[in-house]
Image (cartoon, rainbow, N blue to C red):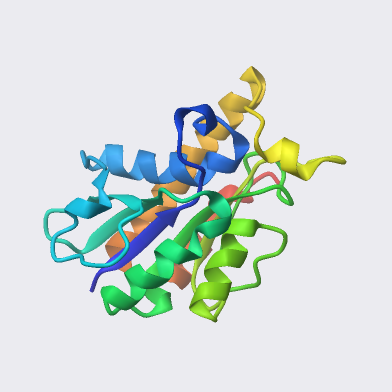
Length: 198
C-alpha cells in the first residue's frame, strides 16, 4: 500500500528557516535518512495531474514524500489531486505541519481533526471535504498579537536547537508509521516518549 507524507511550508529560500516551514523540514529529514532526493512533480512516473510539488519516492514506490510548491493557503490544490490520482484513501495520508498552539518543539499526532487556524490545513480539509486523515503537528510556540508575522519569522538560535531536536523526533515517528502503517501504535509509542517529564 502506498503511503503519502505531505510536509507543509512555503516555497522559496527566503522561507526556508521560518516557523511556517517546520513541515518541510520534517519531510526533508525523513528523505535524507533514506538517501532520497526531491524532484519536480513533473518527473513523477505516470503522473498526469497538476505538478506543483516536489516529491521523493522510495525505490519500491510504497512511500512518497511531498512538498507542495504552492503557497501554504493553496496546499489542498496539490493534495486532493494526488490522493485521487493515486487512488488513495485519506487514511493513507499524513500531513506534517507547524502549530502555534503547541509549545515550541512539542509534537502531537492525531488521526483526524479540524484545521484550527492553520490556512494550509484548512485548504486540505476543504479540498478533500473531510478531516479524517492523520496529521503530525510541530509546535512553534505562541504568536502573541500578530500570528501572520510570527509564523514567517525565523527561529532564534536558542529556538533553533529545540526545533532541530523536534524535527529528529518527528522524523522518527514518520519513519515508524511508514514502515508499519499502524497509527495507533505510533501514537502510543511516540506520545509516551514525548510526554516523559512534561
